[in-house]
Amino acid sequence: MNQPSPYQGRRRLLKGAAAMAAASVAGAPSVARSAPADPWAYAQGIIDQFSKPLDFSQREVSITSHGAKPCQLHAVDGFPTIDAKGKVLTPIPGSHDCYPALRAAIAAVHRAGGGTVLVPAGDWYCKGPIVLLSNVRVHLAARARVRFSADPRDYARDGDYDCGANGKLVLSRWQGNDCLNFSPLVYARGQRNIAITGADWTSELDGQAGVPFEDGSGNGWWGMNPKGARQGPNPNAMHQGRNNPLNPESLATLAPKLDAAVLARIQGDAPDWRSDEKFLPALSEAGVPVERRIFGLGHYLRPCMVEFIDCDNVLMQGYQVINTPFWIHHPVDCRRVHFSKVRMESIGPNSDGFDPESCDTVLVDGCWFNTGDDCIAIKAGKNLDTNYGPTRNVVIQNSVMNSGHGAVTLGSEMSAGIEHVYAQHLDVRNQHWQTDPLNTVVRLKTNMNRGGFLRHFYVRDVQLPNGVRLKPGFYKPIAGGPVKAGTVPTGGGAVITFDCDYAPAFDLIRSRPPEVSHVHISDIRVTNVKTAEGAFGCYQAFVVLGPVGHSYNGPDSKQILPVTDVTISDCDFGTPVNAAQPWFIHNAKNIALRNVVIGGKRYDENLSG
Image (cartoon, rainbow, N blue to C red; front, side, top):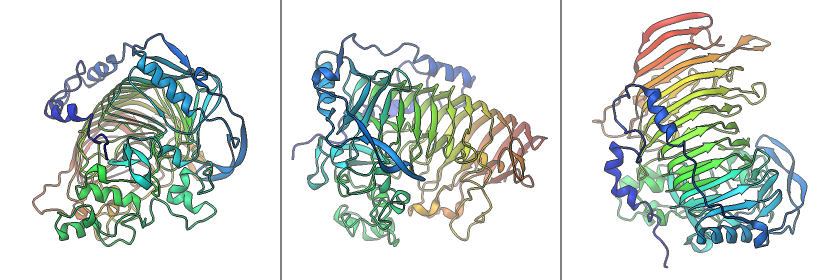
């Protein structure tokens, strides 16, 4: 079968990996293991990389010139959010399909040397992905709404890799692991100078993830998640967490050269190890090449809404996106990514708002997050999939966070490392605190499997007018360890959370201890909210759960380092519910508090634990 290599297009990066370890993209600040002399001047240097807008030709082509026609909508029973059944709007059956027109317009503009593909005002039904090509901007006019079809077959039809019954798939990355899978609804690979933009927040991309599949085969993309499956008409329906009989009974069929004992350790004895969500990371641990990691039709790994792989000069700006199957925006191995003035409204499973993975030079500015998972989650690969390298040189600023698990999160898929991240001027509004609260604000999550490093992370000027979640989401350790279950709120309730033993039981191979250092957080201001029990701003001010040695199961010689060199200064955490224990620390040292107020009391001290 003639098809491009899944690794074609990353050769330039792989050849330059050593150079990238020492320096960032051309023109960006140089990367060093030591802390920058002035971190916020360093951050400004990253911001300055985006002072000149991307240059597109003045050429503009409307999708109507290639035959697109708007559609009409009707209401059907579905899921407006993952927690609520109700009416959702979707194109009426038999609506005109605008996918061919979008594809033809993009190709025509690309061939002509670049420019803008215009989606005019109206509702447009699209039975397939928007695939961007170099020097093309797709622009949604005011009141233009693209309604992507609720049919998985439309995203396994035109990909680069003909995988037989699984469909024609694309190279993707699912929770940190490479695979061939459904196309994301907006996709590009190996392109430069690309953009998806909108006139304002009436310009809308609708993933229709809460709409039942059009062929009646399931209760929509969200139904591929365990929670969504349970809430559907058939609570025993297949989903990503159930054993999939299409996955081989043994990894030996895909990795025949691996020692039997190694294979047994990777597979484990859990009855659900052949579920798609566990089978893919097992393929990574076994070193199975990506061209043999085939999912798509017959499988349950939902596609991202927007995913760009190995692209340079990427702009996402000025639109609203709703009801997405999985992660909302996922640039992977991209350089110079500008994410500006985008609004996200998707309370679905794994609806992270923005997940830059193994990217270099990223600016998030002026965005609005109301998501079903982390608002922002910075990633860098998982298991052995570290081929794209670390994420570095990221600035997050001037944005609003409402519902979500974490406002600014690093991990959990961070095996290749994260460095030089700067977050400032954030309004963590937590607007829905009574019904769907934000769990935590600054969140690190990794474990002995995901490992990686985090260094040079700076946060300042974060306002919390409605605090964070007041009920704890407790850490679930491996039995027998030093930290007891039901005691530490790593899953929600603390304003700052370092969780270096995130979901340890999920990963069978735990031989890569993380390294966390040089984290500096200042000027977080928490305002209490009034409840029947009193006025509180959080359950606990902060948690620093360093690597838990009990969870490690690799060679005895591996060093397990504590979290170190953390400063928290000029912060007011409001009143914690757990006032008797305002913080928790395990396997951490040199945690410096300077002018920190908790429950009206000031702290200036150095902590270890």
